[in-house]
Amino acid sequence: MSRRRPATPAPADARFWGPADEEGPTPSPIRPTPDPGAVARSLGNPPLAVGAATARRHLEAVYEEAVRAATALAAANGLLDDSES
Image 1 (cartoon, rainbow, N blue to C red):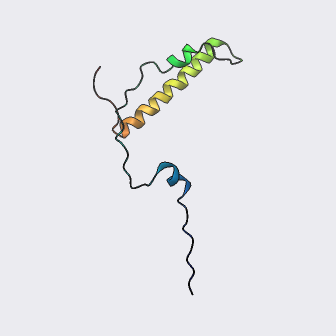
Image 2 (image 1 turned 30 degrees about the horizontal axis):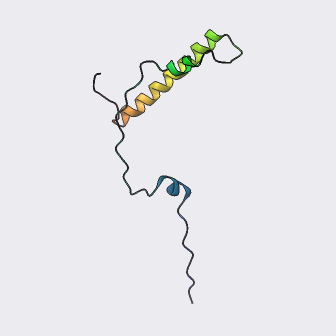
Image 3 (image 1 turned 90 degrees about the horizontal axis):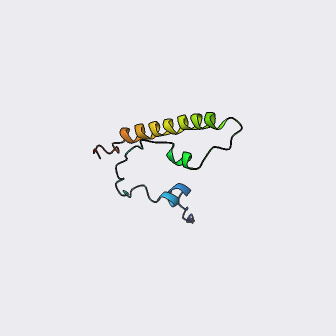
């Protein structure tokens, strides 16, 4: 006599993201920001042990690099907004 196996639940990622065969909405085009550090600057000086100017300069470099990486990923996937505004 054969026993029926209980139904196995979907993997955690499938439960979270949904079935892989469903196609989601088309993402809107991405326009890179011209000023990556604007939000961080609006919060004031960073609370770091080094001088405020040094900390801001280093954090600004990190924000700019993050925007470059995100822009490259968007371009590689055809998601950059090419319109001039």
